[in-house]
Image 1: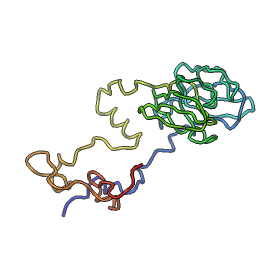
Image 2 (image 1 turned 120 degrees about the horizontal axis):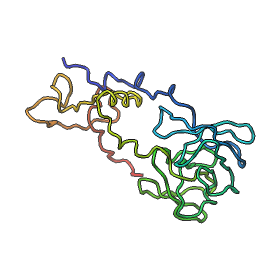
Image 3 (image 1 turned 90 degrees about the vertical axis):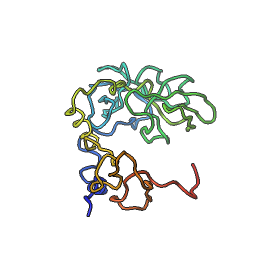
Image 4 (image 1 turned 180 degrees about the horizontal axis):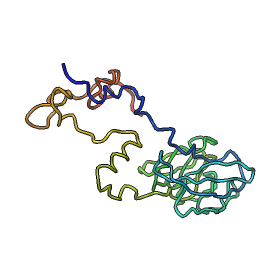
Length: 233
């Protein structure tokens, strides 16, 4: 009888779920429609790649926002349709001219921001009309409600992947914060007793590697089966 493979040991989550206790909090747009705020401090959030800024608004509301490049402590930010196009200000998409870099974009008006939140990323406003078209970091174009809000600028923290980790211990801690296990060994490099893909004189699966999406966690070793008969979206 073979050994229980890694996917089976992990099960449906448990200690492998997101480390929510390490998050600084929800970084989103404020609930106020218009007003001003002051950046108190900029801190690193272990739960995300981008730094976050603690902001206190003129109605005494406090919150976190995704920090863009060149945002500084004690800087004043503006919220609303009358806000200027300075770094960190929050405006509806209809008030942002074409060619402007934006981040933390709302999918629906008032949801606080769902798109373009990772370090070093930004989207660009492409066209304005009854709907606003933006270009995402992937190059894909997306049409949104002009009332959706977005922050001006590029998310800070870009280039964090370029710094070498230098030793395996650092990579272990990086994976642990995800949470993922390190090192990650390919199934084809294992013995047959340790993984369904193991064995053989060369790294070759030697059997169909696709599994059903309805398979239990212990059977999901390899690629998911194709979407046969399902409508493409």
